Length: 279
Ligand code: ADP
Ligand code: MG
Image (cartoon, rainbow, N blue to C red; front, top):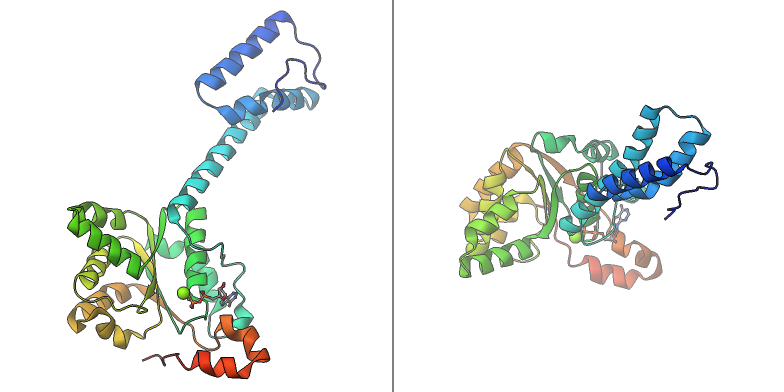
């Protein structure tokens, strides 16, 4: 932090100038414009050296404060989003996922789907990049200024279960209604019958046509009845999710297993043997 009355590039200040400068520093401190206060000496020196107009000088000074505020807000949104990995859409390798339409993902990266409360369903077997894309979409939304929250279907169900026991159901439902984008990862890995299915259904219903959900699942929609233990709930939930939605089917080789394939054919058979065909 530079904080001297006589910057190397500035001529020494007169007493009156120095006190005015101190008053200005004081104003910035009172207003909690920390970044502007920090950059004040540098901006003033540059303004003098380059003969900036007063408007340009003020603009430069306040721009530093705006940058700092934006960075702080973004950090807050990313903290809240609870993304489990640093995955981004930019580091998704489309050559390794031939089934994925790059144009469609590029369109989703603009976050325009959030304006129409469109949902995104990522369907495919384990290891094909569903979570990667979901996290990437979450990050893109947070970076674009949208309130974003990442959870797994199992976590969501567990939280709702605790909330029901502790009498916080309504608060928890409001929490899951809040974010502009809610990412629900891994529907189908664990069965979610009964109360868990109802919780998920209520979250989907209250967001319906208002805010977007990005949902990943290893199960084709035809087997959601099995996952949720109830075909009626599954059908009603699918109605709402799919009404305004983009569906990406990711199939093919598991990215996680790609390296091993070359090395060890036996491992390949063992690992992919557990994959379910999409229904
Ligand atoms: P899924 O959620 O479908 O089971 P993940 O998204 O967790 O799969 O992917 C498994 C690992 O492989 C992750 O580390 C992910 O970043 C990586 N991965 C998968 N597909 C790709 C891809 N097309 N490009 C880059 N990394 C990928
Ligand atoms: Mg996953």
